[in-house]
Image (cartoon, rainbow, N blue to C red; front, top):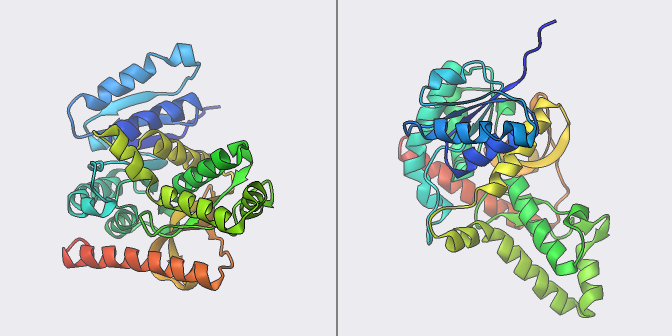
Length: 325
């Protein structure tokens, strides 16, 4: 009886790609191919990771390449290719440069891995997923983006620090586009079912102060990526995006039916039709298997609509530039 291990191709050998390769190997999830345009870069990163196999006790095949043909037969392609942000830049500032890069990536995935699922991480995320879907022509359940898991994890982390509890017990969800208009859902945030706002009010014995603390955490969540960029000075966040994408890879390969916030294509859900936006989905062996619609109050709906409008503006700019039809 022959056994075929799953194959995951990482398009982009930068910081995120390197951590992705390591995490996928450590979890023994799949054989890994890392592609990058820079000569020998992926070969060096993969060799370094492979030489730790005995120490870390993993047994997957690892390959670095500068040839797209090596992604042939991939079950999942994770796209990190593109320029990272620099201090003072927004994700939207990367639009033109990364559109050119992602268009080329999409054409090659369509040619060499036509049956794969695609997870996009490149920024500006919502626009790059849209471009990937249009160029490949893949079904929308097979093309989606990683952002909501990361944004939600950041929100949960700040809540855990503030309340002095384990982050493992914090449930937090962020909706909308991956940018300054993202929508952390305060009403749904809880620690093992106990509302976070209730705990903040108990801590400070003051509703106004509790609200101010929550507002500060929301603001930090929205600006979290920029905070890392400012501290690093020479790059952008890489470990947390890679860890978040690895969670998605595992959910697909193991058909876990995880309920996760993902940049997914909406077809009427949340009142949005024909755009990629961050929402909770069921992620499993068939990719995005179902959109989960949360009940939003008037204030949340206004914030969500504002975030969707920001995504629409990005898509309009891409259309004017000729990247989208």
